Image (tube, rainbow over all chains, first blue to last red; front, side, top):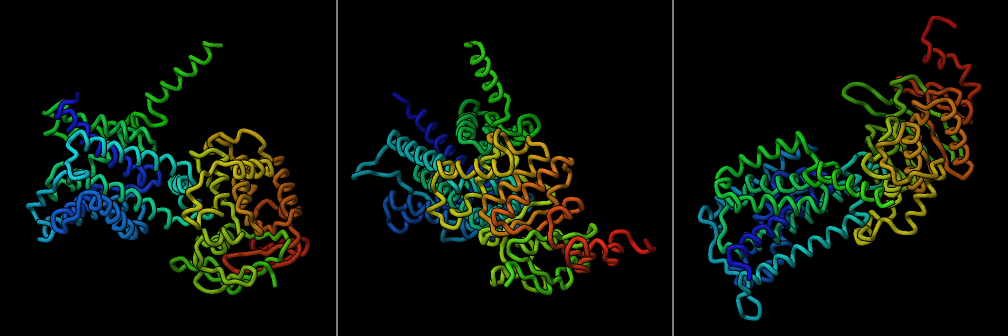
Length: 298
Length: 249
């Protein structure tokens, strides 16, 4: 059977998979850079924590509300983001992250520096679901994200996002309401991040503002970029590899931010599509092997 | 009532008047040529009509309805499609997907309708038909970015056609094309016009302009200096001066 430690690692990785996939919708599919994704994780976490600890809601409604609130805030905050492009969008999203973190840190209602504790794990039919049960819950959410992801990329919404990513102006000339589709990307990505935040809160049982700061946003972005931005497999693999890294090498944890920064630099220089991106070494090697196998069997 | 009525259209950029009190009509079913030296304001005119720019003064009426200042996607959906002077394909998408982006205009306004699969029998057939119509019968799964310029230009037109337009604004479609390609373009424009599409054409290539346009409007420094049939325009002294400068002919 799986040891308790392994289950913990898997749950942590699983939450990051959800976060990476949700960021990929905004940044990978719709092409809108976001350096503040952890803010929505935080909004979801605090929403869930507050509804549970202060309003007496059980986990399940608190969890759903976390997604709804994070999505709604994402929709509202998307509006200032719409008028700026690229570099300025990066700074705007970064700014949003700092403002949200500061709100959690300085407003007493959110527990200020002490954060919120006593966020019990979920129960079903009166009994706590325990760690293995929580892992199943996380896997369930991951499957839901993947299903919605595949549905979206095959839909007109996914096509509109791709057009916006390639050339916003031309997309508008083709009948796409660019503003509306951008807001939708931010809303959806933020909602999933909010759900991940709720899972995070009920798993750790206490949350602090620093958990949802810029550093966390960079961790999530690194996973997306490392694995292959704009693909389905990329963020999943990125989250698994970079999520497992601290467990494999404890000393690396100390220098995590430095390590991720260097990793990103190397990636941008040598494999900008990510290790599993379309034009990466691994994927091209894979295509080459398949072609060779096809010609050899003739 | 003309299909497109433009009155007193004025557009300024930081002190430079790109368009000044331009007034013209586009009649249904015609092929109208818009010519003039570089910097005359021709593309700015298209940008105002297609919604990329909001004019400072003046009105643009399409089928009697004011459209000046509306957003590009709104205007595209009303049936005014445009191509770009410097082609703007979606480079990473296939030719089919490029056309499908435009074909999806009928779905984008409704979120629920937009959740349907975009590659379906009807849409793929429409994309194939649009690409064939512009003379690209094969290779539809290539990435648009890998196309040579001539084919990219045809893709631009195929995309515009997927919008089911009643008016096609073509911005220097023959730019960069060889002679035979320009001839093929000429035939395509004639065919599309015969099928009922009103065409407004910005062109520098005089053989094309004279060969396909029955009426011309001449712009110079943002002002309309002449209007009429090709033969009259060719002899107009103001037009000659605009292109060749003063100093006698």
